[in-house]
Image 1 (cartoon, rainbow, N blue to C red):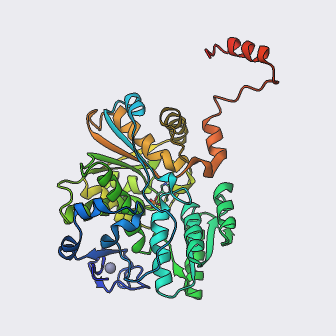
Image 2: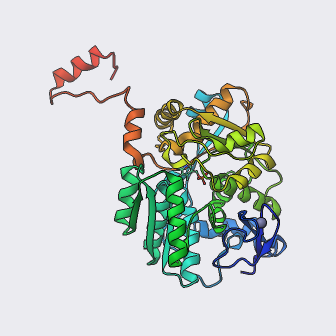
Image 3: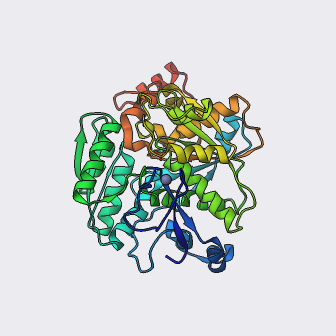
Length: 415
Ligand SMILES: *Cc1c(COP(=O)(O)O)cnc(C)c1O
Ligand SMILES: [Zn+2]
């Protein structure tokens, strides 16, 4: 990879070759970050060149990705998700320039596809035929789907609480699924032991530094879709912390190659029932484990594996933190759907819920240019969505026009 220099430990600064089994720092256990030769990249990639590319997927940013020459790329359409101008929602929230980036429209319906696509391409190139991870759901389904597309086998460890939609995706994508009695932490530990024993490719976002490299492409797209105007704020839901770190890396990369001239501030949003990253940011204390007490299963991570990277991203960006209740998450799910036609899962809309709260608290000026990332699709977890819609049940009637008119009148509905 001519564009990659090495992998650097974000905790102790030790430098390593960016290889196939480069995971956490052997010296201090810290997570690694892939370090690029931006001068070289500037010499081979320009905004104009990018604009000419027809490929809407994340592979359009090849010069900024850790992909070996001659790799077989995943044929799935990962990335290229729409950025909607959300005028109606903006009005409701009190924001004049609000955009929604709907990453629930990826092949397996979450932003995690960006990371998994990079992982399976790297695994395949390294000649590793099996990929594995532990996940609360979306990392798993995205790995299983992307692995299937490239002909890799997958072994997936999920905590027993994983919603049916996500579990079903795994089975359909042909993964071997191990449902662990216990929480995410227990699941993670078992997967780590099995990966070590069997030599599988490790897609745990927590340890594999290439994954946030895939996730950062969401920022490349946001910038391109805004004509390289940079948002003032980007709202992101946070679990392990890999996503928000990826979002930050993406903007920093663009800044380093001179495509943008400023950086956004990050809004880190967590569920109030599980907010170890935000708590560490707010108190200045080291990360401490928390219970995993929220309906937003994808961000119910009591021991965040990428907490250090996430905290660094929030701090460097001059960001803010917001915690939201399950009620606020569910309420936002309905609001987003009804005002924009975008259907997010609970963790998918948590960023938007936090944004709403931040505006209410006047932490964000009404004329700020804001992007809210919707990270996962609502159909993955229909039972949570039904709770969000509980106040608006269907009208149950026989097929009779007279009865329909009566019901409309009774309910004050003006057809
Ligand atoms: C994984 C996930 C997140 C959070 O990403 P982390 O890297 O764990 O912080 C947010 N939303 C959805 C839908 C996810 O699947
Ligand atoms: Zn280190």
